[in-house]
Image (tube, each protein chain N blue to C red):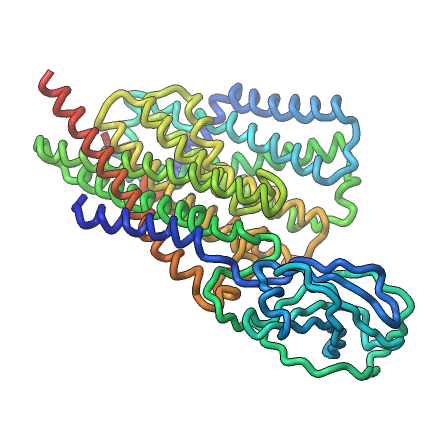
Length: 217
Length: 354
């Protein structure tokens, strides 16, 4: 398990250029937002831009999830570990990666636009939303990337399948973080949190249950 | 599909189409026309809906309620079955200034209009008990059998027989589709090179596909009937409602399912991957349409504290048409599926022969 996780991290490190590409993408997106708007007074706009950035970053970073697993590596992995372990390792890794990237776009937004819209916000709540949203995005897209990889179709299909699938997550995340920005209490925002957790759990369980069928040939 | 099932399906649908249209709405109060209310003599016109003022002229009573005090009005003119004018004498001091207008007939029961009317010159005193008159309020008892009268909905309440069964049907078809996808995966799990096994997999996959495509049709019909209904009740073709947005996402997810299918050439691989995605889609559908709308504020009845029809369908008149409608449409969905399935089968044998 841990060696699988380590393998993912090492692979990513060896492909620094790809990760650097995504980081550049995040920076460029936020900077373009800054050039276009300069300052954002409305929390709605802030929220929308952050999540749009997060969504597209996730798609950019995660559609290559399985592309290192070509030819021999696939069969080698197959002999070493069960498909569930492989999937779990990948989901943990990419969930964390998505959280990291989204945390970075959040930090960049704060850097460029200041903290004005967060004057009443419950930061702990907002960051929880960011984390859960990112892990959900990461898990769902990792699974779909695996599905598309096995189908042999181009990576463009990930976006086609992924957008509808992550929509419920986006709807809830946008509402949850919007409420957090208004500084609503945990109990008032609890139902949205519950839905976020349910979606995360659904993605996790479905991926683990279905992945073995995906993996075999 | 068995012939007797088809017959039941047709009978149910014909029944719901006719019964859904011919039942009248029960009488209700539509509006009140009045000047600014003031102490002393006021005149107003009560406008009813499906009422029969003219026929029951002698027994008609009109009165104004302020809190629990009633002030009887003197009827001056009954123009037709739905319009009655009257005058009422109001005192200087009232317990509150929330006025409601009532019309009372032994045949139609008591109908009322609760409306914000402008008023001027009243002193309010919560303990004031001005002398009112005694009336016999017969609320919610109707001799006539009919659909509930709901402000905003009015006659469009009949759409419940069309709009809601579409979603029930879609739900059932999609769940069948998911069950067949599970069957596809299970049949694949057994390691065998048997040709029959292979055929079984492809057949289950084909049935899953056809169920999903029939379900898509009902999803589309549900969206269209809902959109028209929303235009007439909520004022817009599309409104920010979790149920609506959820339905749209479900439609997109299943559209993605068909895109996935069409982008894979190999039959066996397509069956496997499509089945996996289909299970994913069905779980999302349940979350989107059953769980999420319950937790978000929306406009649909039965959700987020809005009343479902159990609260106002007092004589079960809606139910007597609604349940047959649901059953009829589900049967129609299955019928549609079986026709599609036969076509797919014929196309396949055609390919083998050629």
